Length: 492
Image 1 (cartoon, rainbow, N blue to C red):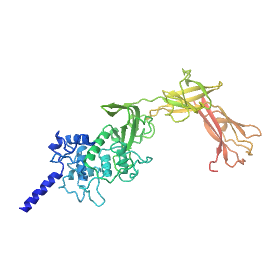
Image 2 (tube, rainbow, N blue to C red):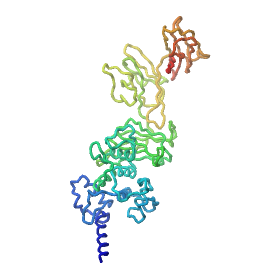
Image 3 (cartoon, rainbow, N blue to C red):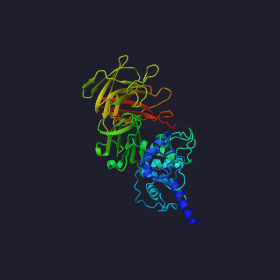
Image 4 (tube, rainbow, N blue to C red):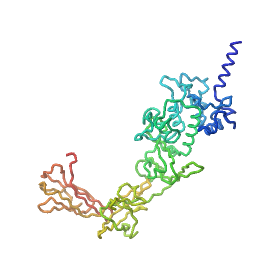
């Protein structure tokens, strides 16, 4: 009789210690210990209504209780709709097929979402820690793997590259959770049922607006090129990923919307431009807020965007005229920007000058491929022509531009300090440029003839770091440019 009573008592104890996930969880009843004022209440009731989590027979949820590794596996497997029917045995010595969480643990292990301890155990009854939960969430929900190489961790107990730490930083960056204080994450603390519900709901919400591109969607094996340095980085993040563990092959890219607007993005199977559409794809990225959530959509396009031709200047520019190289005048007064930086993305809408109004270059807009001549009119009346060639190169959105200043003559003076001695021109140098030297000096002049380059040898010179004199001629349509310069031994 005592034995029967003991068995009955144990059975009742087991019933009251396990959460339910049946009728009660799916009902509209409220848990007696989860008032709506609790920060996790909304998440608890949402997940319960969807039959993902459950309460206890006495009508409680017990949000302060810890959640075990086995329970976490079962809940997350259900949440991501993971097929648990035919998973292979993971071989954990403390998880038999009779274990109520066996199928979920096996399926999650097969997908490399979870792993066990070094001694072959899984620890299904161990409370799951905050760090362990971070790693499971990142893997289960396929969250973007941000690179934190140059990122300073906000938590003193979380480094950038060890164990669970990168995954902790990922869920923190996505706003899924915070630390236990401003500077600590408390990785080894266990998670309560209330905290778990809130983290799961927050992860689901963080994942929802993210768009994932996979190389297999294009019948490719990998992305060899993608526009990760797009100038619209304030609109969204593009985060490269890999479906195969320990692989260096970039086979997926997460696009994470950050704010409303329209940007651009491109992917390719090849490193260099190729006109065959099967090797690349370009998109406009549209981000709009819909029902309080950012929604990112992709629009395929073959467009090229207006590209600034950057012209270096040393004087104040009055105006710029533009024509095609075949003589068609496009404008007598091209709109241009003044800039100090050489970065293409700077000075798109406004000028950038120093306190004295000086600048290093101007930018003129080029909106079609072709060859152009820009005539820059400087203060004081000087005019200089520049050749511009714009070439479309898929999968880029911007044209590849070459800018060449018209400079048919050039000079270099090696000074009078050293005895340079005689100079020797190579054979056929005269076909590229005519080189002369002022008598009794080290002053050399070059007059351009055609594209090419050569070196002028100085066999008797005594200047220790001097190698020779270089001459280079470039052409772009009718524009010709010559340089004559000292070749210096930088290792001296």
